[in-house]
Amino acid sequence: MRRITILSLIIPFMVLGPQIALRATEFHVATQGNDASRGTKSAPFRTIQKAADLAQPGDVITVHEGVYRERINPPRGGTSEQKRIVYQAARGEKVEIKGSEVIKNWVRVQDTVWKVTLPNVTFGNFNPYTDLIHGDWFEPKGRPHHTGAVYLNGHWLIEAVKLDEVLATAGTKPSWLSQVGERYQAQLWFAEVDASNTTIWAQFKGVNPNEQQVEINVRQTVFYPDQPGRNYITVRGFTMQHAATPWAPPTAEQVGLIGTHWSKGWVIEGNVVSYSICTGIALGKHGDAYDNTSANSAEGYVKTIERAFQKGWNRETIGHHIVRNNTISHCEQAGVVGSLGAAFCTVTGNTIHDIHMRQLFTGAEMAGIKFHAAIDSVIRDNHIYRTCLGLWLDWMAQGTRVSANLFHDNGRDLFVEVNHGPFIVDNNLFLSAASLLDVSEGGAYVHNLFNGNIVSAPEPNRETPYHPAHTTAVAGLTNVKGGDCRFYNNIFVGRGGGSAKGSEGYGLSMYDKREYPLQAGGNVYYNGAVPYAKEASNAKSLAADPQLKLVEEGNKITLRFNPGPELKLARTRVANTALLGKAKVSGLPYENADGSPLKIDTDYLGKKRNRTSPAAGPFENPGTNPIPVNRL
Image (cartoon, rainbow, N blue to C red; front, side, top):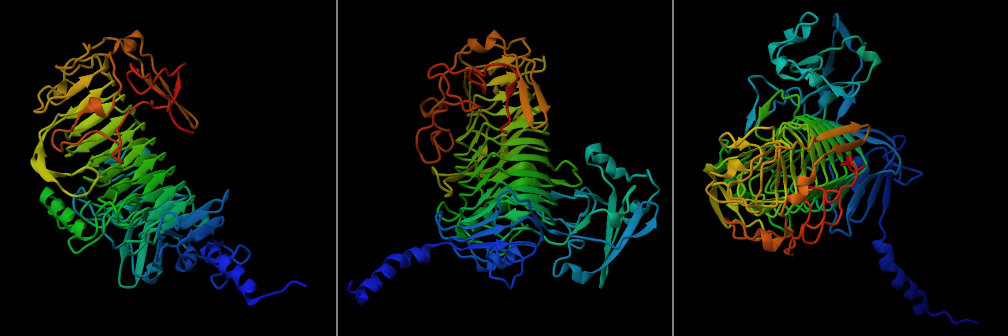
């Protein structure tokens, strides 16, 4: 008979105890669930917030198919990459989280105009129909704009200035509506709020709103912690829509439909984010008593940066977010925004479209991606189209790399504003009519295709920061004299014209008058695009037209491109840290974010480049035309 001792009983628990303690809990949420349940798969919770309240570092929240109308306020985050809190849609199931509510009981007023009256308690402590959009660098175009919205079958209507515009005879449009392109024009709505009720009038042409899905904004955001420092959260696989988000300037707390709120280490992946009044995904700034008090000035933003240091703005505590493989659309300020909190981040594989295209208001913060201080951040493999401006890197883009992105049908593809370098722009397709607005210095542009015009300008009136390598610390402030860029192995396509007119043109001749000289070589200029006057490698402006054409067939996008034999005449060199040298202002080399040497040795499609004489432009031996350019 085996002898059993007390020690033999204790040892298994000593061994298994730590494993039990480390085992993550998976909470389940379903529309048929109950918050009084246990949160298991067989007894799920009803709301995501219930699971969020209980989840601890290392836990997973799995949400099952259905529509959830709530704002998730995660009360805590994870403690490390290994002990995250994960929010995920169940595999293969469509999970929608909305900041709106369905509204019935509409009453016809006249013709196509209907109204509904709701008690103000419907909105709790936040009524978006009294919440005016405002803030630094916001321009309302002479009209009030609220964060409320009305949606008919998923698409938003347009807010009228006054009730009479909604009640006007059919076919009569207010004059300001002509500023909105036909693609984005919609029926009008108007709201009045008194002490007890909110009344909304809306045009529903040809439909009875009580027989359709009509929704209105009731929540400011969909997924956003109310306090900063909720780190290491993953949000995966959701459809998130309808948020009454505020204007998000770089000087104020940036609240998005989903946002990280001054935290570290979020992963936002595989989501559909759409219909946010201002911003879709926010990686940015904390709030403080000085929000929106900059007087719209550079000096005011410098003070914002100084306060950010007091709030822990450094490599150890802020940023390092990953935003990947999301579809982001129909946001009227920005698809992805981030002031200071977008440092050390990776934004990759996203499709971003229809951003600030209604243009009901304007300002200085609108783009598919708008970042301030994208220090050591990587923006790669994104498809950005139908935006007012594709990518806007504003202030402190240092160590930033913009690589292998597809831009087309934007008002302009890339704007780099008051940065001092080094930053790297490589292997991108800039296919809009306007490619680059360069009000910076110290950029390295390598293996890109520029199919639109380029503007280069100094900025003598603002002093902006530059940094020691790979840190948020400020080394100094200076204005932008312009130039000190590197242009190697690019393709420029003109419009059959000649040299640049002033600061604008096709090719690089607009840099001839910049104070700091360029480094340039291996570039190819088609259809009248003009080289930099001092460019090496005997660059020539060629009459040939490469006949670029982007073709969209369903989900497949291809590029027709006939470079001709001229492409092989370019005297190219491999672009690396040694070739690019050091940015003049910061004195720093062009290197990877981890400080290792840079070598641009793959092309837009991920193919290896020739080791000694790579092809100019984004494609290394692309093969047969047309070239597939979107990642399915």
